[in-house]
Image (cartoon, rainbow, N blue to C red):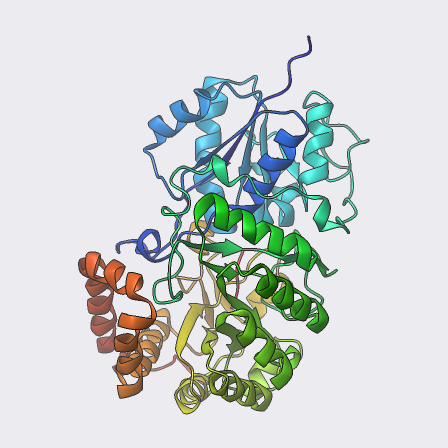
Length: 495
C-alpha cells in the first residue's frame, strides 16, 4: 500500500510589535491562519494527512518548537510567512533541516511569493516555494511524492545545478465554492485562543471570516502578490452554510469579515444578507467597505443583516497626498459615508496610515484634523510599511530612508522615514494622534459605552490592564520628542 504523504503546516510567530516593549498583539488580536487552514482542509480531503502548528497563537521556545514539528512525523513541512514572520520561520526551518535533512521545507505566502528568486539564492534551508495561491499547487506536489517539476505550475525551486527554476504562475481559482471549509479543528483552543481586536465586536465567541479573494484596485502600498487583481468570491449560499457550521460547531455569534472588497458587488451582499436572515443564525458581523461601493441602500441592507461595524480605509486626510497612492480616493465622499454609516446605527472605524511617501507635517496635521472632524467611532493608525509585494517597494528609496529589516516590517515600526522627518518626530506625531483622538470627551464616552456594547472587551481590558497601561505610558513618554521638528522641508497595509 502506498504511503500517503503527511504534511505539517507551520505558522511562525515572527515579530509583531515594537522591539523592547511588551507585545500586546497576543492580548489584543490573534487572527487564525486562514491560508494554512484551507491548505490543510484541501490536503485532507484529498487523502493526505495534515497537521497545523500555530506558533503565533501558541509560542514555544525554538527547541520545543522543533520537537513539536518532528513529533508529527511529517514527510514535508510547509511554512506560511508574512514579511515580519519570514525570518522567525526560517530560523526554525534551519533547525529542522539540521535534524532531518531528508524532509523538504516548503514556504508560501506573501513574502515568499514576492521574493522567491532572492529567497532561493540566499536561504539554503528552503527547498521549494509555492508562488501565489497554493491549493492546487500543493495537491499536485503531494501527488508527485513531493518532487517538484516543470509540470507543476506555481513552484519555484532549485534545479540539479543549483539554479533557480520557476514553473510560472498558476491560473487563479475561479470557483471558490469548490473549496472545503477551513480546517478549524486543527487549531488548539479555537475560537477562544483567537480573540478579535478589543472593542471591535459585541459578543463572543467571535472569529475572523473571509469571503473573497483578489482586489481590482492598485493602491501603491498594498501587497496583491498572492491573490492578484481578479476579484473572486464565495457565493452567498456557501457563506451562510459556512456560518451555520461555525455556529453549530463552535457557537460563533459574531464574525469579522476580513475581505478588502466585501462590498464590491452590491447584489452579492444583498443576497448574503437575505440568506443570513432567512436562516436566523443570530450572527452579527463587521466588514471593510470602500466609500465608492457604499450608498444609503447598501448601508441599510448591511444594518438589516446585522452589521455592527464598518471599517473604512482613509489612509490620509490630505487629498493631494492620498490621490498619489490610493485608487478612487475622494475624502469628501469618505466623510459623507462616515456620516451615513453612523446615521444608520452602525459603528465606523477609520483606517489611517502615517509616514506615506510624500508625507509632510502639514499632511499629518490635516489627517489628525480629518479624524477629529468626522464622527469615527474608532480609529486604527498604522505605520506605513513598503512590503516587497507592493508597487511602492520598487521605488521606495527615491522617497526617503528605508531600513529593510524584515522582522520590523509589521506596521508597528517606522522602517521608512519620508524625507524631512526623523523617526523620533514620526513617533511623537503618531502618539499625539492617538492621544488627541481618544482623550476627547467623545472618545472617552465611546470607551464607556463599550461596557454594554462589548462587555467581554472590557473584561479583557481589565484582565490585561498592566500591559495596556504600559502602552499608554509609552505614548505619554513619546510627547517629549514633540519639541523636535523635521530635518528640513518636506512634507497602510498588510501582508
